[in-house]
Length: 111
Image (cartoon, rainbow, N blue to C red; front, side):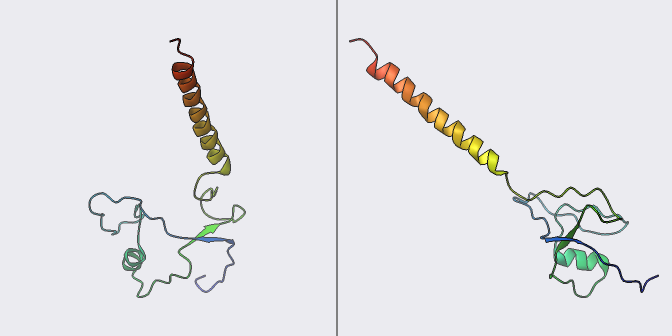
């Protein structure tokens, strides 16, 4: 029924946003389902025919235990900490390699 209340569990997240936007965006319009890469609040309000679109929660990412919907495996944005360590090891390795090349070519060259 339309009046039934339902409890959902999840976490709030922001709408996705493009890093760089090339060209003009396509207008969101039916038929449904509408495919949109980076919709804004105003575009969603227009599409859904809502007068006011609340910004209290942009998205609710449902918990994996919820009954309806798609498979939900949400990952936090950004790189994992181990990737930062790998970059640090890579750059220190490069610096050490350059030091070895310098010592061999400049200090180790016979006169």
